Image (cartoon, rainbow, N blue to C red):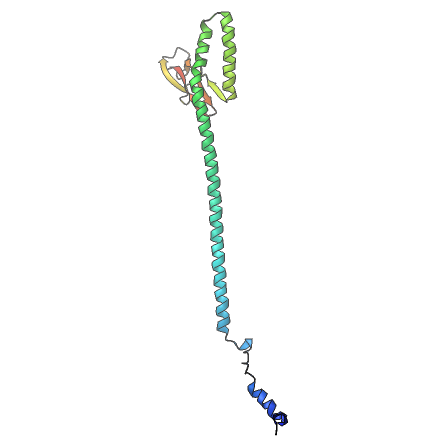
Length: 188
């Protein structure tokens, strides 16, 4: 007999035997629960670690941003104070010019007095524009925060001790900061 004449039953049997065996899948219900639980726990731990790391990075970022903002403000304040201190140094050097002009007004003729008054007005305007106020505490109570007592005299009858009797040199201040203390004579 020829091969074609073989029975179809044998061919089927041959095909069954030659086909590769496919392993059967184990249904999900039959997989051990430990594997599933272990995988989920591991993922949860990784997620918690990632959240903690993200919170840490966010905290560091917020702190760095705050530190930089504080640094910027401190730097700006330092720069502004240095500028104002530099201006105060220059103004301190020109204050004696104003003092001398006021003294000159006491001893000059009328024509010269008018000219000196004009110069003094412009001098006072410059000081005013810079926010500088004169400290002239005559007949006021002595305040060591603004005055320097260079002389004293006994208080006359009816006059209380501790008051400024005479101002030798006016003081100047900008806001609460004293640029030059007033030099005064105080009653004791």
